[in-house]
Image 1 (tube, one colour):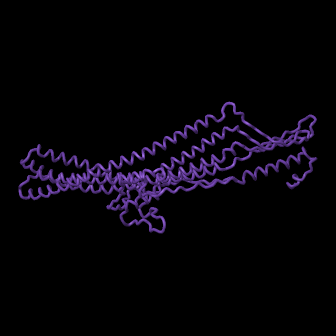
Image 2 (cartoon, rainbow, N blue to C red):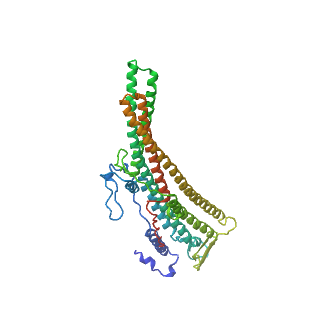
Image 3 (tube, helix red, strand yellow):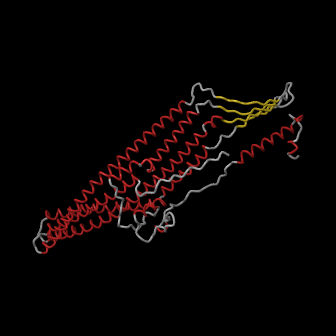
Length: 472
C-alpha cells in the first residue's frame, strides 16, 4: 500500500493500527531527514610510513613572497635565506600550524546554535473507559545556551587568534635558532682551522722532543709538557668536531633535511646592530609587536569572555518549548513546557571562581613576561657592551702576538731563540686568534638574540581572523 494512504486518513481513525503505522513512518522520515541532512562523512586517513625529509636544499620549499625568485640552491645561503627555509620547511612548525585548524574548528563549534530536543511517548490502551492510545510530544530548546552563545563565540575567536599569534612566535624563534646555528657553524669552522694549525705546531714540537730524547740530548721531563699540551689540545679539537656535527644535525632538522646534508653557508655574517636608544624605543612598542605578548593579550581577552559566560550561566538552567498530548479519551491539549533548575546549591559559583582565578593567573603571567622581555633586552645590551670591549682588547693583543710571532721566526732562524720559546710564541698567537673567533661568535649570537627579542628584521605579526561560524 502506498505510504500516502497513511497520511490521508480521517481524524476518526485515531487509534487504529493503520493510523499508528502512518504516524510512525511520518515521524521516522522527518527525524531521519533532519538527522542525516547535516551529518559529516568519514574517510580513513593513514599515517606516513617514512620521514618527510628532503635529500638536498634543492628539494626544499624555496619560494619567496611576491614575485621574488626562489632561494637559490647552488650558492651559499645567507642568514636571511636560512631563516626563510627554516620557516617554510621545519617539520615542527608544520605540526604547530596544524593547531590553527583545531582552533578554527572550535570557533565554528562555539558559534553553532544548540539543537532542539524532541521527546515523546506512545501508550497503548490496555483497558478502562478510554477509546484510543495516548500520544504525547514535547519540543524544547536550551535557553541558557542561547544566553551565553555570543560570549562563548567571542572567547573561541580570541583563543583562535591566540593560537595564530603563538604560531608566529614559534616562527620567530625558529628563525632565530636557525640563524644562530648558522653563525656557530661558520665561526666554529674558523676555530677548527685555527686548532688544526696549533696542533701542527705542537705535533712538530713533540716530534723534535721525542727525537732529542731518543738521541739522548733531552730528558723525559722536557718531553712531558709538549705531550701534555698536544693531548689537551687534541681533546679540545675532538670535542669541537663532535659539537660541530651536532650543530649540523640540528640545522638539518630545522630545515627539514636529511641529517647528513651539509648546505653551503655564506661566511659573510651580518646581524642587526641595535643601540641602547633604539632598544628603549622598541621596548615601548613591544606589546603591540611581539607575537608571544600579543598571544597572551588575546588569551586574556578570551578568558574575560569565559568569565562573562560563567557569570551569565548563573541564570537558572531553562528549557522551553511546546507540549502536545492526546490522552486515551481523545482529549487533545497543547501548551508550553518549561523546565527550570532551582539555584539553591550550585548556582555556578565554582565555575565563576575558577574562571576568575584563571583570569588573574593570565594577567600575572602577562606582567611577568613583559618584565622578562624588558630585563632580557637590558641584559643582552649589557652583555654586548662587555663582549665588544673584550673583543677590542683581544684584537689589540692579537696585533702584539702576531708581531712577537713574526719576530720569533726571524730570531729562530738566526739562532737567537730556542725551539721551545718559538713554539710558545706561535701557540700564544693561535690562542689569541681562537679567542677572537669565539668572541665574534658570541657577539653575533647576542645580536641575533636581541633582534629576536625586539622583533628587528623579522616578519611582522599578521593574524588570520577566524572564520565566522555558521548558525545553520
